[in-house]
Image (tube, rainbow, N blue to C red; front, side):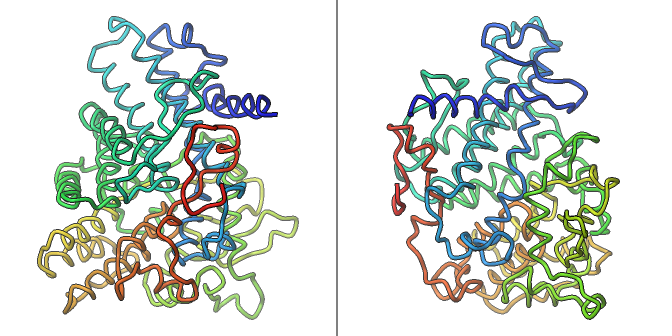
Length: 489
């Protein structure tokens, strides 16, 4: 039985390598081996572009889970809100295998590009750029494994299961490395990207700015000595030196309409036209849509968001000008096409008919406003004045003209300042990329994580449960791996 499971696992992680997508008009090779994978420059370009097809492994359903866990969204909340999950929960196996499938695709690209002689490339700089791109993609996926399946906050032994080679029978099963070593390896990949990647031109591919952002978020969430100052320096650098093409859209509704084509979006999940986008993202938008209020004649002109959100956040979003720009009616995928009032910033119009099958459904991995939110928080955590800390928030708000977001008065206390910044994270980014969950752990109220403000009915839980369990599909076959403490495996 274990042999069958082992073979199945290898097939799953190699799937990302052998899948085909039209991204950037070149398809990745099929049935690749280390001997024949990349023999030409075009092959190197192809394997790098094909790597991006695995962004479909990190759909918005990943982040909806974190939003529910933070106490914001009711979508997919039955297990995540009370944090009552265990190692056999099937979603964890899907997340885990998806991340390692993407990492395997990155490792294939790194190996293929490294092994191709330098004279096959237009220049050595071009080769280094391609390697930096693949390494940044690997780091981005490993960041999610660190944040969601490891003790990212602690200097202990519960780090990531690190793989740098294509998965095979000889290397697929191993133990985890420490948290400190996990950060060192991820930072090494990101530093390679920061040094070699070009500036942002499109959200469809990684850029120098995205590599910087990933590193800053890792430092912010970790919060060890010196991390906040280091993260602030990175954020300041991005804000001061990013190309003018990376900027906020004054019209928030237009930004979400443009999706990955918006210059506000630094990195997003992209699929080619005609690839069945609506079905590919079904576990994201459909979950969001049907968590909302169903349309009735009585509520068509006065809908409520309460069914989509938990009470505390619902009071925030209903009173916020962004409510009308991010909420609306969307149709479920059903014979009747029932309308639900839900976050249309993500669910768009839903799927009422075939002409919407290739609408710009996406997952927003990072948008420009988060830079201002991070700058405000990091200034606060490095003891800047309250006026200095509120300034990035008001700059962000001033750059919207639809909706108009009035400037916020400087709070009188630092506690009030931190709560204000936290609310802005939630209101601007809810359900997009998981930022509200990690903010709910970082920010404190009444000497405990502020997530208990959002979840007053949930008894504070062991810190070990702030990350998910290693899936039982891994621990049952990989005898070397240490499970996370506090769980059933």
